Amino acid sequence: MLAELRIQGLGVIEDATLDLHPGLTVVTGETGAGKTMVVTGLHLLGGGRADSSRVRRGATRATVEGRFLLPPADALEDDPPDEDADEAPRSALHLAADAGAALDDDGSLIAARTVSADGRSRAHLGGRSVPMAVLGDVTDAALAVHGQHEALRLLRAAEQRAVLDRFAGAAVAEPLAAYRRARTAWRHAVTELTRRREQAREMSREADMLRHGLTEIESVDPQPGEDADLVAEARRLADADDLRATAAGAVAALAGPSDGTGEEPDAVGLLGEARRRLQGSDDPALAGLDPRLAEAAALLGDAAAELTDYLERLEADPQRLEQVLARQADLKGLTRKYAADVDGVLAWADEARRRLEGLDTSDEALAALAAEAEQLAGEVAGHAAAVSAARREAADRFGAAVSAELDGLAMGSASVQLAVGVKEAPSTDPAALRVDGRCVVAGPDGVDEVELLLTPHAGAPALPVHKGASGGELSRVMLAVEVVLAGADTTPTLVFDEVDAGVGGRAAVEVGRRLARLARTHQVVVVTHLAQVAAYADRHLVVDKGGLADAGDTDGVTRSAVRTLDDGERTIELARMLAGTEETETGRAHAEELLAAAAADRSAGTEGGAAGAEAPTPISRGATTRRNGARRSRRAG
Image 1 (spheres, rainbow, N blue to C red):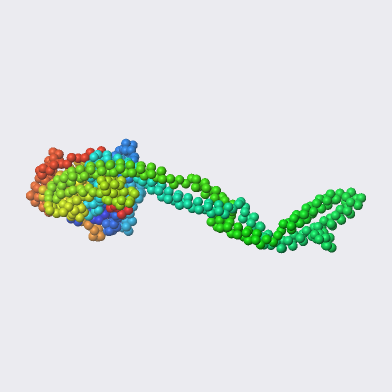
Image 2: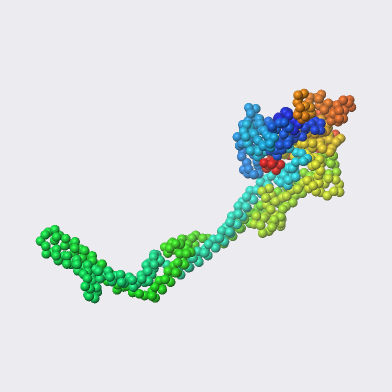
């Protein structure tokens, strides 16, 4: 719960501390005294939009600080982690621990929000600077602020469905849990089937491409290294005459012309002459060179023989050259598509054959998976139908209970109902679910769309609550819902901003009585202008205009202070609220009568009171579903 709230530099409040009661705390004061700043401070603490115009004139910043009393630290061990974090957000204590916030010695958590005059905003949690979203998440789990002009959570379809589920308790929670488990398996099967089908098409396209490539390569039938051999052969064929002249000249230089008409000495003859001269010498050094010259002569003879053979094989063959060039063109067509050379093309073909062996585009696996998905879809549809039936049954009871509460809130001719419908989906959508012959959207919370409808008076059409209710009526509808859900709401602190607007007399007493009933299971903070509501408070705070801070102050800014009233001061304040002044005996007598009647109601535990309203049966907390960040949309980030 929120034990203490301190506000500094916000509007007309220079510095005020509010000590809040665990039960019902009311905040009153004259118009313009600054009651709204209390709610504004709570909005800021909850991560709401920071407006620099709210910073008190002359102040550099506005600060709101709240002290929250959380469950003992050992609750961290008793509260196991949720299996589905999206469906069951963690408690304020866990969120604070995740943010690294430190608790005070008494186990309380300090949350603070600062807004500077230039519009910059800072958030702190347990002595640590944290992002605004983190502060909002923690405070969202600890308190809910309800007012006429905010985006109330009851206006959102998802929250209306969550309200109904909390009211229904285990009747919806159990089939909904089974639905979610089956839906998870079904969605996995549908996703896998879609992936397999898309993959099968892709694999089929790939197989066709590989087969086409292999057919093209096999028709050409390239051989390893063939492209390099063809290049050399083409060059020889194109340069045959020049090659013949070159080879013939080399042969003549080595062994003389083939026709024996050469007059120039050849290498072989000169080498033979050198050997003859050395062999006739008696000098051992010269004679020892003969073996080397013999070896050289043999090498020259071999070279001459190879050149002669080359000349015999070398022919100018234009037809063969044309064939070689055509073959090179065929190979180039392959190397343009598959690899840089013929060896690379052959490697691509080997890999393509291996890839084809691994591609499985059979229909048997797809058929089996499709059958599994269809079976799971039937299970999901069955669970969804059970959830819908439980919700429709609970919706009737919920509408009757809220309508009964409205009867005591000056809306006796109004009635509320929850319409449970479905959102249809195209039959071609693979993720659509067929329930009772219709294709519907299967979301994580079922197939139902729940809408809160209000009939403001007899004969009027039932309209969505955000269209059919005025600001005051919307607040009272919300109050009626909170009372009906008192035993199921997991938010410990509820704040109501002038929820009694537009009511008076007996209806105002009923508002106070219902707020006191709600305070039995929650901490309730109410900003009110009605004495009939304030009389039910466990603690009464008043916002007073204090005038200028002191005689030397010349800024002309009104100062307001917040103080806690004792019993005598409460009588005076209620008299002022009733008669506009506390000086009349009649006003004081009426105030004392209100206080006595309220005290009697609380002590007797009579929730219906003189109006005879029957209290709804509280719903067990154990049968509830925790909210999923329902108020985050009001934060600006």
